[in-house]
Amino acid sequence: MTLRIAVPNKGSLSLAATEILRESGYRQRTDSKELALVDHENDVEFFYLRPRDIALYVGEGTLDAGITGRDLLLDSGAKADEVMSLGFGRSRFHFAGPVGRYSSLADLNGLRIATSYVGVVEDHLFRNGIDATVTRLDGAVETSIQLGVADVIADVVETGSTLRAAGLETFGEVILDSQAVLITRGGEVPEEFDIFQRRIEGVMVARSFVMMDYDIEESHLDAATALAPGREGPTISPLGKPGWVAVRVMVPRAGSQRLMDDLWSIGARAILLTDIHACRL
Image (cartoon, rainbow, N blue to C red; front, side, top):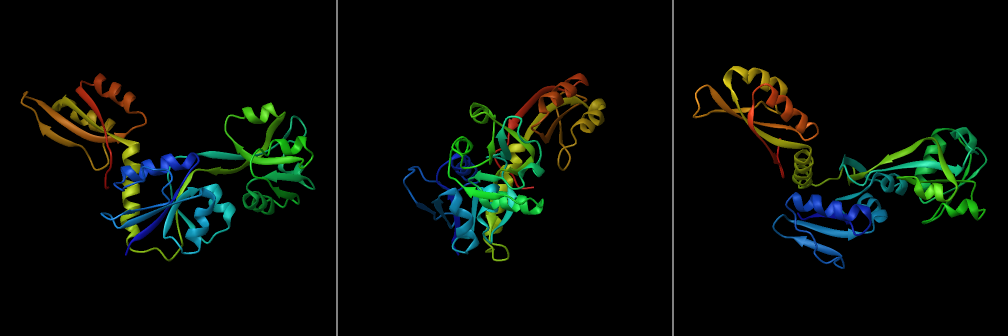
């Protein structure tokens, strides 16, 4: 059976999604005008769709799985489930209003809220017992307050510079932490999806780890392995130099430079870091 996967066709998720798929060993389109691509070698067909539509296609069972934003998944109300987060396309949703006018969620009672994510905002308000009117606007919601369409907006906030330029500031708690996610239709995933997910997971792990090689005297080996125990333990090989061994170990990318310093301080030499492109653990 050919696995049918939805991929964002444009926007901030598109490039990163195609990169992770390429790193996972799948063919990807070279022409942005292509709407679909069949990877015969891996028996997968990719469909390039608007990010906002992907959850709907997956939820209806038209496609088996897809990559989209958590915000778009929740906003759609589709019968699709998040399988795993992918670590890119991160964003935060906040309420924002004129500087100094509002300070908490309770201030929203009775107000008009403009947003591009009605489903997300209405659910958040309902869960917090807030009665407000939510209006959908696509793009440039910051101007809605100035134009008298809304009292408050709910939108993605990155640096906050756009809000400040419009005389607005965020207030209250974060509505949603979003990022790219892999989604499926719950309970109806083909067996072939397991291989697809395992490949994606392998790339995710590979991006978070590096391979470290170093030489060290056997007398300092216990101290070195205590600093860098690895996922399954280090690989240790004898060197031609008497009393020395070569060590290979998988370590987290974050903090790897500090780890090199610590290993050097206890006698490790010829320390190398190598990228991992994919793995299965």
